[in-house]
Image 1 (cartoon, helix red, strand yellow):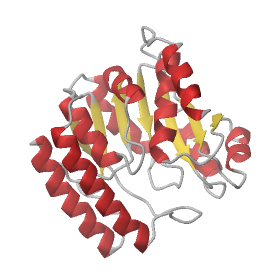
Image 2 (cartoon, helix red, strand yellow):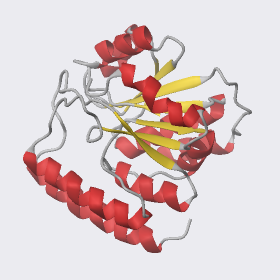
Image 3 (cartoon, helix red, strand yellow):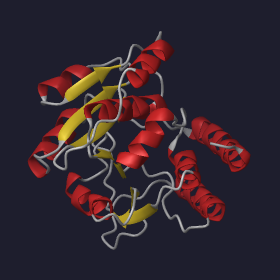
Image 4 (cartoon, one colour):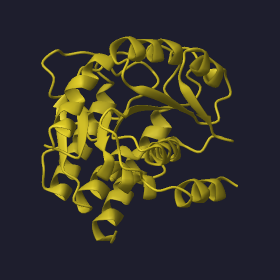
Length: 251
């Protein structure tokens, strides 16, 4: 059923000629009722010109209701399909509605809406097709993840940099801005699980110009991270395998 829905949504629409004032923030969310309302409120205060779309990934709590009551548009997926499918759904929506550029940020409050203006500058100036917020380029400090996670990020930073032949400091960042070219690419094809790193490789192979921008990372505002030790080990193995396969894969 879900596959048919995605096919219908994509094949029944074309990317419309964008209007320069059409901007969308996509927030994938799973069981984030504790933070989603506050995140949406901050976005609306800091970025009133942006539309906000929450893709509710089959949450078992009141994420959907909290998002709707906070004034966001909401797409409710029929079950938990994973972060990659949630993001792709939002990008299909953006393509269908003709948004000129898209920002993706997380539902847990770790990304600051006030950093969006810096994030989208390379997109608006034509300097890049895709901008990625990097906590490691910021001079402001901010929240630090666990030592194990930082080691994993460093490992994938080196590996991703080697693959795309461009320095990448924060390959796991989910704070991103995209122009129409990037939205069109990812609306057609997007990695389903732990997608950020593989998506960078996919974008680079498609000729997408990527630029990192300094941002400050905050501590999670509510709920719990879905990544535990076991999932972290699975993450490393899956992403490493996906990256190796992506090197030899044709678009």
